[in-house]
Image (cartoon, rainbow, N blue to C red; front, top):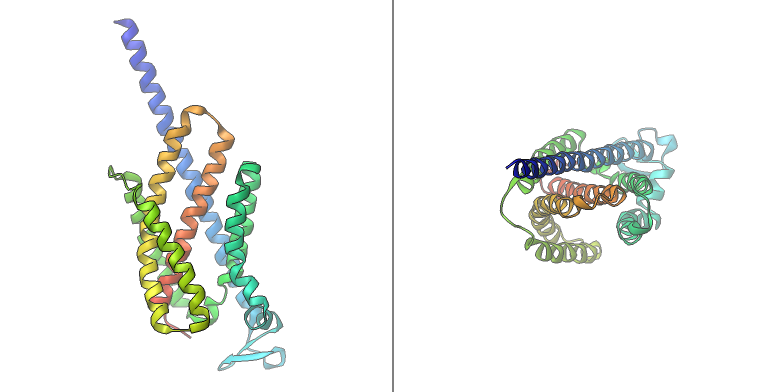
Length: 258
């Protein structure tokens, strides 16, 4: 009887350790993602501030009433450099995913923050196109939606792992359609991409949250802190991308333009 009590106590202790470890793991995921989001919007705001001026003497091109692009703005948004700025985050994601096994957890975290800054430069044009109030409003709406979807993905007992392949195919379709629409410049296609994209990235938010949780539970007993650290960074990257894409597509749908 005493042995049974000891075994039960040991099992309960192990379960409690896993629960505490899971909370710490998810806190690291959300914390890393939040720092990345802060870096992104700080970089976007700072670059937009340097790219736009109200002083005609510093202007390279006019983009609105009493609003001009500086030489930096002209280089980022009008020159061939805009293609590098546009596709740099995508290249960063593929590169980081391919090299993650060769990185330490600390290096992966640093690379993620650099990527977040690059993403900020890439999306900085939103401050030229949309009103500041509209950007903050859509950001708040996205935050509430993201929190609800991620909480549902974390707490649901339903296995949604089957969503993965369908959602990834949807993302690939969105990327192809977006690239094609660069040349077509069709408002109808852009509206469809944004509307479908919101649904896809909403689904991915719940799916990725559950996947991050299940991955931790499957590997926690190995005690490989380095692997779990890198897993938290990649989980933060996944959720970060879902948030950014959902935000950008909601902004395209409902944002008030300058």
